[in-house]
Image (tube, rainbow, N blue to C red; front, top):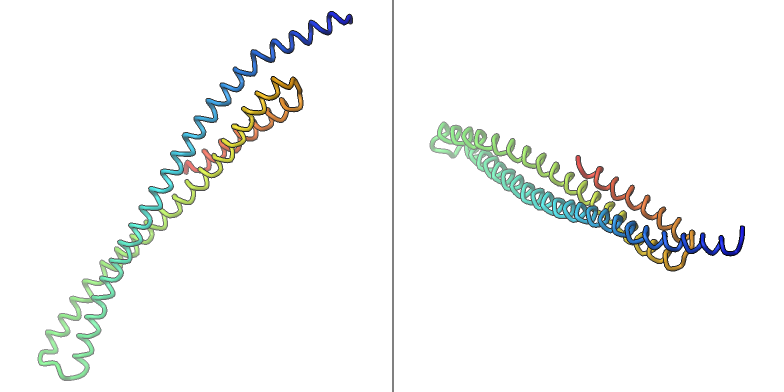
Length: 183
């Protein structure tokens, strides 16, 4: 092969490199933006689910405290009855029974709300983990854009290989974060 042929091949490689680099960088930037949006949405949904968990835990606690108050009143009524100083033991027994009856649904409600709060909390953790994983992938994709741009200027294959590795790794990690936070 002549020296002129080698120069022509190098010139063609540099020319073609100049055309694929902006296209590749633009495609990676769009993919990065899409994953960035998904990560932001997961993060916001995680905060919402955590807020729902906190509010629901509070409502559960309120219901449990109301049930406890009824139980205390029942115990006070029964203590008066057993002391023998009550004027109307039947009225106290009826009041104690009403307190017990009032406490039961509140306790059931507190248990149901606590179960719901745990579900919100678990969902918040899943979404937060997905958002964090997506962010790692987005960071690798950002790095890949820079490496592809530099590889065009430096005309070295090593940077191109590293950039492609960063693209594949970043996209795979971001996709894993996206899929893992769906359920």
